[in-house]
Image (cartoon, rainbow, N blue to C red; front, side, top):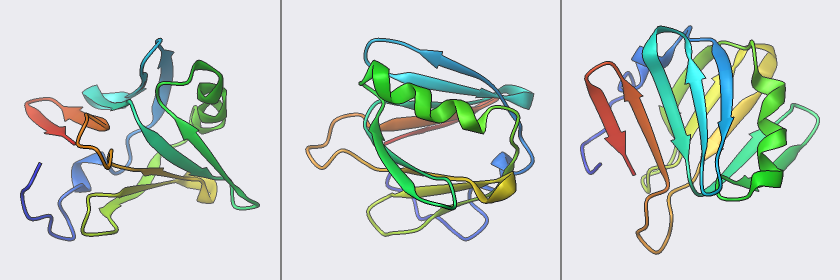
Length: 119
């Protein structure tokens, strides 16, 4: 994804509720209402308001950190840095920051109906 990201680029994610966390050997997939899916294969950060946890989509043990987001809805989603870090803020001030792989491997993908974003 090399496209320019305007401030409303990720608005399609707003108000989608996380309904399922699927754990695999090399990735974790977050399934939201209305056909929104986020697949994480690299580093991510979860901010609980009282602290932050670094985790990785290819580490099965780290996926348990995402369970706190179940039932929460996306309040905002935005590109926070020029190198494609995505910050997803949920209800109750929880947030998830997706980090691209510095070596160029697949880090995360976001799919929503016909829209596909791969980083």
